[in-house]
Image: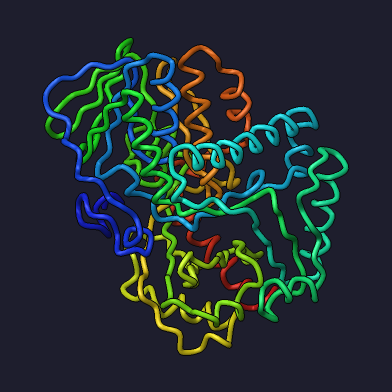
Length: 434
């Protein structure tokens, strides 16, 4: 079944802490009849809205179509972490692509973080961008590798924002004995993701972008002018951007072969009050080395926002809270008995290499997806570079398109069972501590 409708009510935001603390605008009208534009965009999340804003500021007529609401998907549900680089280390990228290409990709990732900071300040100050992301390690080999990566970045790129933490420093920062070391990247950060994407939507509309909600695209008809068909209308555009990520239906075989949807889940506890000091010593975000990653931070009202479990079927499990409570209390036994007030899930796109799939589907159809949990910065920036490419400046798009993203074995037909098998194995390794 289509992930757009399997787990959510049409047009309704999930019962998340984010939705409870954001000002949701009235629903925008659906597309009806025939409409023309210079650029049509499928998806009103970070990617689609940053592309739309980039193009509108350059004088293009842009129409964005979303099956639900602007910011309804992963852009408004995620952990809010604005990470550095990619899901592969720069040393890994340099070994496969060469030093020059790896450095160019790093520079783009730095631009991506800068864009989040600047857009948040300009369009969504209530998103409260704050610096600091720690990475917790549970194995001595991981501690050494993380410290080596930080030293490599400082030595080769002059990036000196990452502090290497030994066991005592890590446990002073993150109040758990689970981690035996790690790093703290003060060049990374975290935001309220839904307030941020709603701010992007307001900025795009102020620049002249038209957003149609409840307008699922059922078919793409390629050609010199591309037609996007919805249930009640057609959008005819000179250029099209596919920006649906894990919620994008199988509209294009090239994207489906490289990107698959998986689900991730987050819980928000009751406000912890002074107990928040027993979790984190600073207002930072944290992620760890587990294959099924634990990621968490404190909200502005001192709740623990904790994400961690995944599943690989389209449907959400019937009980999200219990697994997240087990993860919370494994890391923080001092929070035993804490109550969950909100628990929600969402769908993201992953690739074989966990690197974004930035594709030119046709001369006038571009796509970016598969950000694999690293998308708060990279997904919006991918939208920006796609907008720039349509406007005639494709250099940065071409650099991102060099990220190595092979198709899943068997293409779209076999991606889910093969990935689920691999994820089951790595999840078992996590539980066994291997």
